Image: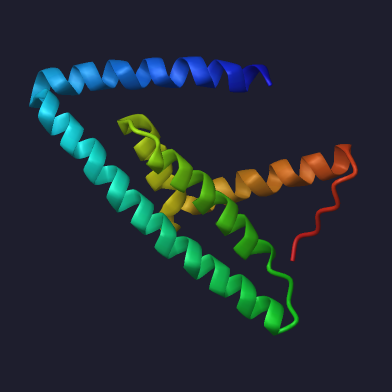
Length: 129
């Protein structure tokens, strides 16, 4: 919980610093425009990828297979979408990294390890499909 509190303090401070730095280089109105552009593009990309993950999960369930990887994809896409919705360049980079399929894989493996660790330490039941 402490790392979450630190994240709520440190991330906005970093974002403000990046806004000031970028505003000094390209101008404040361009910074506002880029924030709006990356937000709109990112949320629409997250929506598209989220629907694809949902369809994959439904297809796997309909074929009698567990949708484990599709659910992990969906979690990554959801977190990425939330980060893309938040204004800022650092959160946008993190969000695009989680939403784009070719950069999502390393994070999926980390999430899978985290879920497995939680399952071993508590009552969460996790099974890789």
